[in-house]
Amino acid sequence: MTPLDTTTTGLSVTPLGYALGAEVNGVDINQPPTPALVAAIRSVWHQHHVIVFRGQRFEAGGMLRFAQAFGALDDHAATPFYRLDEHPELLQVTNRQIGGKPSETRNTGRNWHSDYSYTDHPAAASMLFCVERPPVGGDTMFANMVNAYETLSAPLRTFLDGLDVVYDVGLTAGINERDPAKTAEVRRLNPPIAHPAVRVHPDSGRRALYVSERSSHFHGMTAAESRPLIDFLCQHATQPENVYRHVWQPGDLVCWDNRTSMHVALADFDQTQPRHMLRATLLGAQSGFVVG
Ligand code: SIN
Image (spheres, rainbow, N blue to C red):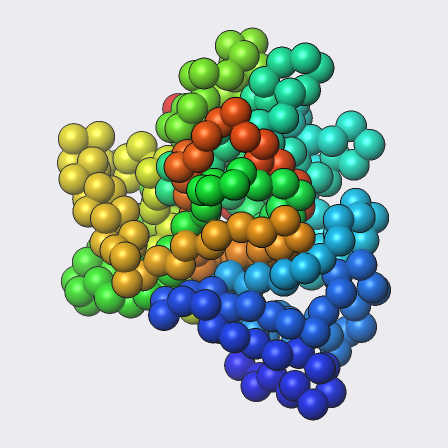
């Protein structure tokens, strides 16, 4: 990995967690990033998996340009009801009322997952901007899935290397509290799909566990055989020492690598208080096969 040259980029980097997470200072996301800056940020991102830019101003155009500097963006067609009409590359994660009704995405992300794992193009990375947060809580936790893989025993790593794991959008926490017609459409768009249980990062080559609370079973194994292993792996990955917990401030842009981390949005707050976030999702490579 190329070491970060802070003299030319003006970046400063402060680790936020033992396992993952770092704050990056010296960036205004609304200024067009130079190739050197993008390369420097990428290097920090690969090292820390989750990076945080604080004190930013939300401008849809600026956020999209910043995100696009790191790769093509998903238009969120897998969950078409929750994106901004004027910018489909921005997904609303909000409990604000929309059209006079509580937003369907007020409970997004309530179990451990990697974004869009239930699609045939699992997200490469995500960038979430905090516009508004409740007075307390509404935190997000992240787990390092490279560490999770590397701290398994060699025989279990070898076993997982040969497995595909099935993702089911129906295991998204809170999905059944959403509009039944929209949920049916999201299920139709995203049938259960199998992906390698170990994901290899295309840039760093690092291997990461790719199993989450949205995994139903290992392909070719029964649910009864799979469940104890999935539960063990989720518990193993989310041990406190392998987790960074982000306490949001308005103006935070938090960027996570979905290939090397998973996350959960906590419901630890008063739902009458606003929490309003916008997410850009970096398109991942086509992967997986639909299972019957
Ligand atoms: C998500 O899972 O994309 C949302 C995370 C959050 O709202 O903290």
